[in-house]
Image: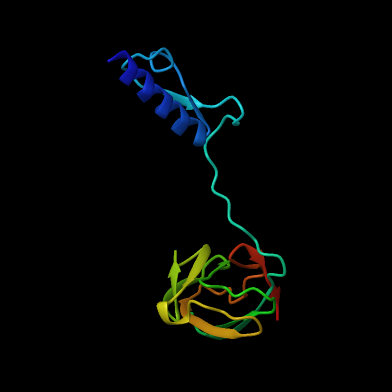
Length: 161
């Protein structure tokens, strides 16, 4: 039984080491209880999720608005001016105060006001280099029909057309 326990501890220690963790307490002493903690080489704090910005990744956004009384129609053209194929995309922008999306096409939009994320539809997920896609929405407004001043495509800042 002691040999099986030692083998179990060795396997567990290797698995924990591969994950950047160390055993503590009774496990480290071949006991039955299990507890893990980050290895001394890791930093304290919550885990972070990182996304990759590809070298040469560039984009341009053209934002066209047609406004009336308390509504507006927006057409957005997203152009991949870089060399990277976007296999899926999300465009982030902030609507001016008082604007709220009521319906949209060629993307899903959430939330409908404030900082909005437009996500690709299944049929327009890819944006090839030197290619463009068109999306759009209708929105209500309370007088401010200005357009967003800042756009990010998958985390990359886009030029305004």
